[in-house]
Amino acid sequence: MPGLDLLKEHACFGGSQRFYRHASSEIGLPMQFSVYLPPAALAEPTRPVPTLMYLAGLTCTEETFMVKAGAQRYAAEHGIALVSPDTSPRGPEAESIEGATADWDFGVGAGFYLDATEAPWNRHWRMESYIVRELVPLLGRLLPIDTARLGLMGHSMGGHGALTLAQRHPGVFRSLSAIAPICAASQCAWGDKAFRNYFGVVCKTWQAHDATVLMQKQKSAPYPGGILIDQGMADAFLAEQLHPHVFEAACGLVRQPLTLRRHAEYDHGYYFIQTVIGDHVAHHARQLG
View 1 (cartoon, rainbow, N blue to C red):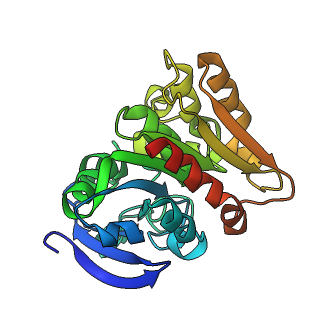
View 2 (cartoon, rainbow, N blue to C red; view 1 turned 180 degrees about the vertical axis):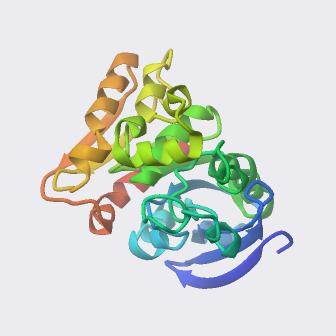
């Protein structure tokens, strides 16, 4: 397909699980993403299907969600496509930057779905523009995906990305959910480390990428159909990194409908994601039509 290199393809629940690579103008390096096309998209490729984009967490790739979450079964049932981009730039040029591979929670595998403004990160770490300005239009142009019916969800760092990008780009995404998201990135160690390196010390810039601050500044509910968040109460990162209660309070201030489900005994990993992913696909399918 012009503009896309198909790396591999697997039959899956009557649909097609695919992995692509392309040259990214926003990132300035090759990027990879995964797509699950349900049976409906293969049967009638001229009729684009609604789509759910998933943003993965720290250390993950475009493959993690598709292999571990078990979402394709539900996507096939609802006739909805799944898309998952990589979590950061990769390759020798990106990895050669000093500090890019020193820590698991910063640099490669930790793009935080933002456009860095500080050197040397501002050259390639442009995940926000990559997703919104490049990947979404590319999907609509080259695949049977209806970008007018596009939902967004994410886990952990990807939950931060989902909650922030959905608010920063009104009209791009029609539905929103998250699993164990970083809800107040400017108030936790993960966010502090990322923002300090990607943005410098200007706190006003940090707040523009904090899901709770963005919600507090809304004049009305940005997602009147409701936001779904699932949080495990045995999550080792809950107390110090995630802070779902502050996002819950912000939603209350602007009357944003929010279903925040707290699950005893569940941790931060993909066994939890497998447990709730069917509800998330259904949540988006209802709103996307």
